[in-house]
Image 1 (cartoon, rainbow, N blue to C red):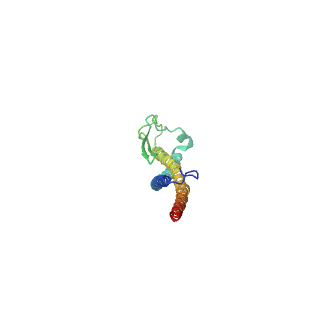
Image 2: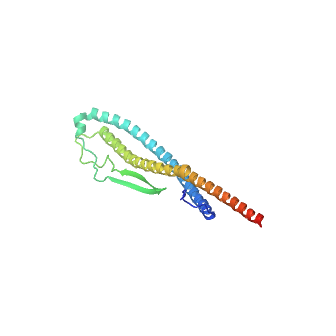
Image 3: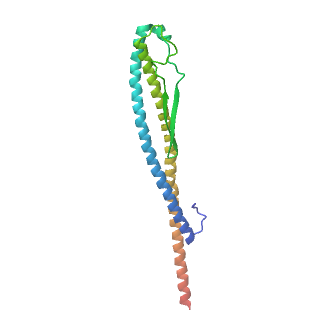
Length: 206
């Protein structure tokens, strides 16, 4: 690392130049990583918005289906209508590493809500079946949304860390190295001039 205690020598200048090269490479890597993270965040946001749009659409449809089912069976009748059998529900996820960030794809595998029920309805209706199916679809979409939300959170954290490190190299470390290089080069130049003047003085006295 640079610092005011480093002796102004040719070897120190070479060492500083090598250090500048390494820091520049680190900065370029972090800058590229920041761009890739930003692109992935945009992609995840696009997926998030698509799922949200699907949820809003399903929510409106499920609300209408619930109103129809209540109109058909009454609130008490819907309250005791056989629910879907959730014994076979499975939550799946796949995970990949992206620039040090774990990205997950999540999904909920629900059995066919029209076929897998806890028991047979005393007074079955297509309205109740449609209502149950739509709320099942809503549940599937929320499972997908959970994975995307987690991805966005982890990407945001990593982006901020990367940006902070990149700016530290760009605005603090690299300028300090440049200042140290300039100061050291100026001192060495002054020393060379002094040595030259002393050498000429000795030659003149001979």
